[in-house]
Structures are given as structure tokens and as C-alpha cells.
Length: 125
Image 1 (cartoon, rainbow, N blue to C red):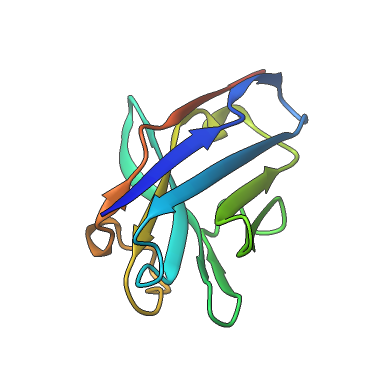
Image 2 (image 1 turned 30 degrees about the horizontal axis):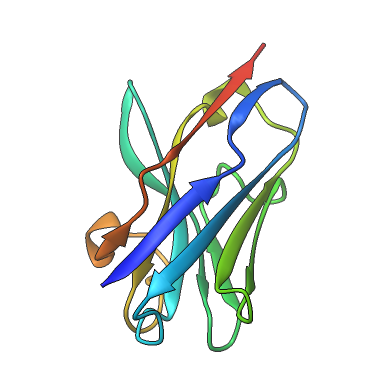
């Protein structure tokens, strides 16, 4: 089992930036796909960005391409999401997740077995 813990959420004005972090512990070697997902009151849980840790292959939702960057630190077993040029539609609870194998380019929620508790992001206009 893998434990995931997010941090770095908060409130920011539109156009601002935030950096989210996720640390992993437990049996992490088999979890080679790591991702960020978000959920808002008006939407279901949706994929934001994922990374296949063995080769650093990344996938992004169209809505965040060019604004968000996902990265990993294998030594620290951590995952980050740098978010820039934030808009109110980016608001929600952001979750870190892990899955075995390669990442699905469609950021499918059902592929992921392990989830963090989430961190809140609020973007005000």
C-alpha cells in the first residue's frame, strides 16, 4: 500500500501561481504512474497531469497545458505540480494519485489505486 500526502494548496488571485507537492511512502516501486487530479463542486474528479516515472513521460489536460508543469523527484519520492496563470476554473480539491504501469494519456481516474487526502486550491477573480 502506498500513502500519499499533498501540501501547498491555498488561496490566490487569478493570474497567480501555486506549487503543490506530494510525498509518497510505503511500497512505491510498483507505482510508476503518478498524477494530479482535481474535483470541484460542479465537476467530477478530473485528471490534470500525470507522469510515467520511469521515463518522465507527461500528459496534461487540455485546460492546463502551457500553464501547469508536473515533475518528480525520485530520490525524495515526491511529486510536484507547478501551477501558473491560474484562473477561477482551476479551483478545487487537488489530489495526488498513483497507479501501476504506464500512464494512460486520457488521465483516467479509474486507473489509479492510491489517493491522497487532497489539498484545497481557491482562485479568486
